[in-house]
Image (cartoon, rainbow over all chains, first blue to last red; front, side, top):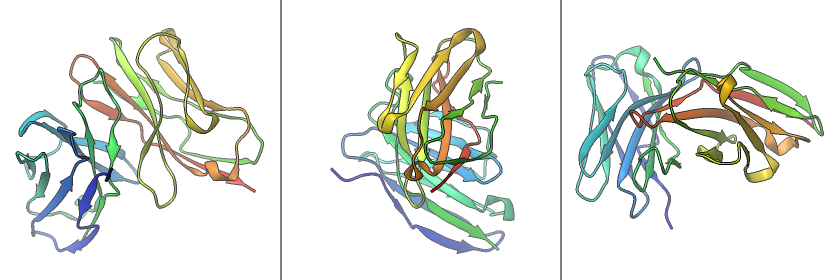
Length: 115
Length: 113
């Protein structure tokens, strides 16, 4: 079956702009979570959605937001971009996302460069 | 706050050498533990996981990890590495209290042919 699909794969923005990234989970998976990956900080959890509700949130400013649609597809938005937002943004899906199931299936990521 | 520490940021080994990558976590409650691997140009994938039971878990490609609760550790091991093991390895923890997954900063493993 198809894996997790993220679009766009690469994008370049300038400071102050906003960006929307999209994630299509594996069919049947209801949980979608987002991560920021940078060389210095590794993977940092942004938020998790389950059945269109944000179930968990990491320690990122309010400029980072997300949503999930009824078909489980998810989008994340970053407003007022800063240079430090340059990173690989990863999406992962799982059937339930609960601690007792665990395995995350990752997409290849969207690489954002902010100039 | 819950955290995950991977002590080695960059490891270089020759083929056939033994590997041990350290991982320690700070949370004292019930946790589920994972190792994920990211091969060059590929997406992150699960290597192995521990939920309960035998603290020695075996994963794909000959990897294993041992959960030592008293040391809050979940070290990854492989007796004999191959060039194809060159990748970045991430340890991760989910606590049963808040369901948030915390990743370590990763260890870049480079195997010399």
